[in-house]
Length: 223
Length: 320
View 1 (cartoon, rainbow over the protein chains, first blue to last red):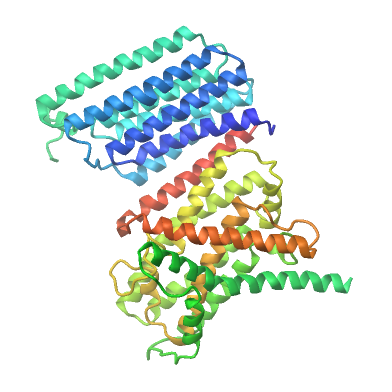
View 2: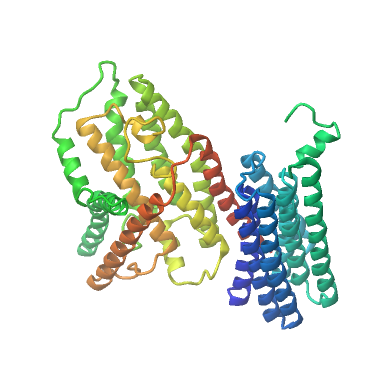
């Protein structure tokens, strides 16, 4: 079992998951963006390694897309948005870092417990990738729901999408068309988000999602 | 056969005396490097030896209402820390008492010393001792679960909690690349910083500050009692350094027969590893600011999360 193929794949997929955790408790927007870029780079390395193991050259295209779009384009664009909104120095109070962390651990345990019995027949590597991917997806959702700020919610969504790509590459024989269309839909989602952030900002003079709740009259007690 | 046994005993005694002799020097080196980084000249590296020697010859002043616990604690703390430090393999594995070098036992020994010290801090009934003890217990309640999870993750990889066997498994490199080991190292470093009262959790160089933890607890001590506590603090730092060296970089240790060559190589590599760590610690310390007390749970919580993640990852790759 101690072959280098498995070890490196394990290392890369595990570091993607670990970076999801780092993302969960960052409270500076710029550092969160940097961690997200790092996660995308780890993802592209992991996909490239899968291409080498599975001898599937089309996965290299996926790795290239992940690196170019999510490692470089989206973080740079988000950096510019954050700078234009003037919130690049802002510190966002993460809702209860301790409980969030514990919930995150619970989600990782849940995804492992779910995937292990379901994937008895597939190879160890594919099963492990699936478990990690599910955990990354759930952690991305958790990142989204613990944040106030629209920009950091976007990062949560993008990191969720990293999990999807990880799951797609772990399974053998995913056609390239699907991956490319996923990548493009993420880009489109990103531009929609970008416009949306500026619209929110125009209306409410802030990108804090709490302002929306207040506007709808749902949360009158706080700020 | 008797001669062989004497050699084994001598090897074990060498390790016990080595950590004891080395501990103040390790502390001195970290202080010197830190002073140089702050562009001060700093005390000489052997200053901790002189301090302990001076304290041993001074009169111990006791409060009127101090109980026996207050007088016993320094010796108890020193004894438990020394035993724990002497059990961690330094230059060689499979020493005579290596069978008792269990990681969980070492954690328990350290916890015993800390428990006694926290009790002694509250014994005289001053406000400083009480606040120091309560903070120390808060840090302990956060650091120890993280430490135990680190222990579990390395024990799951090695299949044992015995340090000597662990080191021999890690030494031959059959474990491979594991992200769990990296996460465990990360968590271990955080726990070690908190346990040794270093920046950003506590500042070892201050007195009479509202944020101090360890120094507040031992504020009432003087003379030979304080010497024991200072020596125990130095030993604890050395213990964490050797534990890190033993678990994560065990290379160079004498594994087989203890002939002169292998022991010398083991000693040299051990000293080199400790020296590197003693330089890295002050560099890390000077590059961060001390954090508020209320942020400790986040700091140690991330260590806990990393260690728990390490255990989870091991479960995925292991269970079939």
